[in-house]
Structures are given as structure tokens and as C-alpha cells.
Image (cartoon, rainbow, N blue to C red; front, side, top):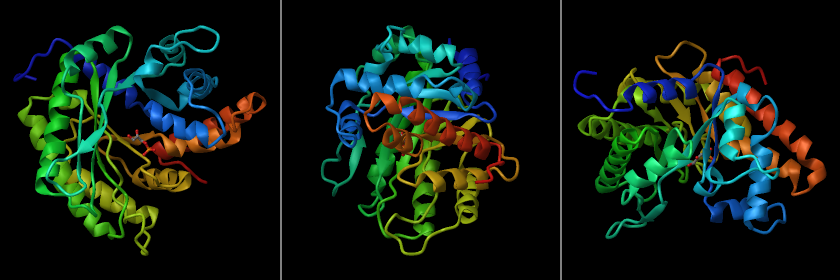
Amino acid sequence: LAIRAGAYDDELIKTAKTVASPGRGILAMDESNATCGKRLASVGLENTEANRQTYRTMLLSPPGLGNYISGAILFEETLYQSTLDGKKIVDLLIEQGIVPGIKTDKGLSPLASFNDESWCQGLDGLASRSAAYYQQGARFAKWRTVVSIPNGPSALAVKEAAWGLARYAAISQENGLVPIVEPEVALDGDHGIDSSYEVAYKVWSEVFFYLAQNNVLFEGILLKPSMVTPGSQCKERATPEQVADYTLKLLRRTVPPAVPGIHFMSGGLSELEATQNLNAMNQSPNPWHVSFSYARALQNICLKTWGGRPENVKAAQDALLLRASANSAAQLGKYTG
Ligand code: 13P
């Protein structure tokens, strides 16, 4: 650590290790209000603050959730919210042994002059927002940027994504938040698994190049990548073993072992695929903790079982616990289906 001495370095290392602890992963529940509204609409509920609070309280309160979940990524509204019976959400998380996290990016905008590509907003004011989130109890952050294979990705879009992630990571660490670095390679398209590999190779390499240039402490970040899979419209599907082979090869070629945790997104994979692929990646020891940071692959069944009805809350929470425990087993390479 000779070349840097950030005020929060020791704490960042400790936080990252806690989130990347054996048999646990991240519950991503940081949907923007608009996206959360779509989830609520699917069970016939209006997109009101009270309904978002009800839904998110349900997600975070099952006893024992912390056995499988080490961190939860919140949207800003939730970080400052209380549960239905008046407990601060942050305190509920701490009681459950779950580290509070916060989405700090401001979403995607069209990349001017480039065909249907996007870039990620949110660097303006990020330092002061990060400091305020730390004050409120957040200890890690997330920034999601997306490159798309059918639309390129152009060299410029990859560079912009990687540079933005690196600036965000440096600013987060300066304010005590462990940055989750999330370069999503979107699943859409009919390309095969080799194209996904090639694009992800460019993206991940460039991300780590700029992280190093920005003097980011690798021991104090977490990577949230897409698994290397065929495009969602590709006729040729891949087995969990093939996904694991491609993805681990790429991790070994581009990600330093100093990075403590790799927390994959589910990215539109089914719940079962997400669990099976993760399990396949943990069949032999890895230099990093290889785990999950799923939103849809954890929440979907819970939302469906709930259906917006109070009498279903317990069954919905049991469904969430079941998915969380399956992914916990997969993190340990012990998922048996
Ligand atoms: P999914 O697991 O649904 O892909 O979501 C993860 C996430 O946080 C996307 O930013």
C-alpha cells in the first residue's frame, strides 16, 4: 500500500471482506422509483412511497436473512426510510448482520453521436453525496454502467464506461464507501458466447487499467460483472459448466487476486440458471470470493408469491429465504438443486 494512504483504507478493506464473506452474497434492491413501480404494477399495486416501503420492509425483515445475505444495495429513498413499525431501515440491516449499500449512479443517458449507446450519469456532486450516505450508515456503493453488443460496443463507449467507473471508485473510496464496480455487458442479442467473451475481455481489461490509473485500492473494491453467456436470443444455449469455464478464464486473465469479491448480477438469467452457473464456478477454489449480487433472481419469486397481499407476506419471505439459501450453497459450490 506504499503508493496510497487513504484515510479510510483500513475500513474499506474490512468492509469489502465482510461483504465477501463465505456463503453470503448481496441482495440488490436498488431499483429506481420508476423501476420499482413496474415491479409493483405487476402485482396490481400503485407506485406510492408507502407501497415501496411495504415491499422493501418485507424483503429485509425475514429472520435469518443475514445468514445468506452480507450486503443490501438500497435506492436513496430506502436508505433514509424506516420500516412500517418505525425502525430505521439502516438499523434493521445492522441487526440482521447485513451491510447497508447505496446506488450512487444516476442512470444512463444516450451517448451523443453514437448509435443507441449510453453512458452513465452521476459524477457531479458525487463526493458530497457519498459523504452524506456514509453519515447515514451506508458502507458500500454501486455504479452500474452498460455496454451493449448489438449496438457495438464502440471503442468510445467502452472507454467512457471504464473511465466513469474508475472516477466513481476513487471518489467513493475517498468518502469511506467500498465501490461496487459494475460494468454490465447486456444480455440482449443473438450473439454467441465467444462474442460475449471478446466484448467482456475488452471491457474488464479497460476497467482495471483505469482503476489503476486512478490509484484505486483494489483490496477495497468489489466487482459486479455479467456472467459470460450467449446473448438472450442466441439459439445455442450454454451449460453451467461452459458459462463457468468462459467466465473464470476471463476473470483470471483480467482481474487481480487483490480484489476480494466478484458478485455477479443475474442480468435477466432465470433464477435457476443464476444459481447453477454460480455453483459451477465454485467447484474448485478461486482467488476471489465468487458470489452473487442478484436483484431479479432473488426478488422475482418473492414478489410473485406476495402478490401485494398482506396474508402472503410470510410465504413470500420464505420464498426469498429459499432462493437466498440456494445461492449461499452455490457460493460454497454445494448447491444440489
Ligand atoms: P439483476 O440481478 O436483476 O441483473 O440486477 C442486478 C443489478 O443490480 C443491476 O444493476
